[in-house]
Every structure is written in C-alpha cells, then in structure tokens.
Image (cartoon, rainbow, N blue to C red; front, top):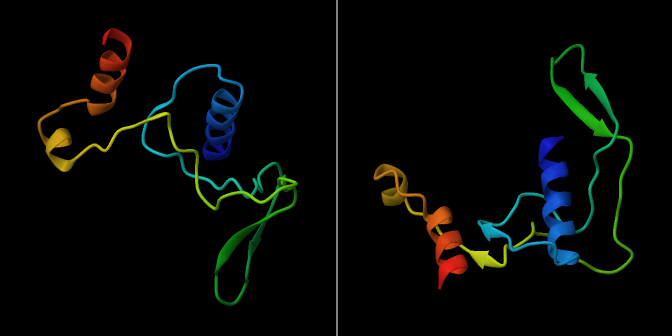
Length: 98
C-alpha cells in the first residue's frame, strides 16, 4: 500500500508544482491505482495465495503505463552504492546551489 501512496504523492507534487522531484522514476502506473481495499484468497489445494483489488481509480484520458518521472532524473550506479556516494543528494545540492 505504501507504493501507491508514495506514487500518488509524487504525482500530486509534480502536477501541482509543489516541489522538484529528484531521483529515479517511481513504481506504479499512471493508468490507475487499484489500491484501497483487497480481498485475500488462498486456493486450498495448491496453496497459491493472491490478493484481488476491490477498488480502482483510473484516469479519464489515456496515460502512460509507467511511474512518475522526476523533474531531475538521477541514474545511480553500482559504483555509487559501493563507494557510499549519494547521487540523489548530490543532484539536489547541485540544483539548489548552481
């Protein structure tokens, strides 16, 4: 459920120009959110478990099947992680002070 909430938050910040998003694209899809209420089901013989969304919110116009792309896209590398370099924070600092 957190993924849907953060996706919607990022989408609102960008749409309403409330801030600058920095980092990687969010998860989720702009084609709709199917969170809100779920029915959890376990099939008795196979043991397969699944959740079925009961509430969905979908746009009235065509939208991308992708998350929200930040205003400042940062592509962190394996080297960044290995060297404990915070590429996202560096991009924030650069945007603020340059």
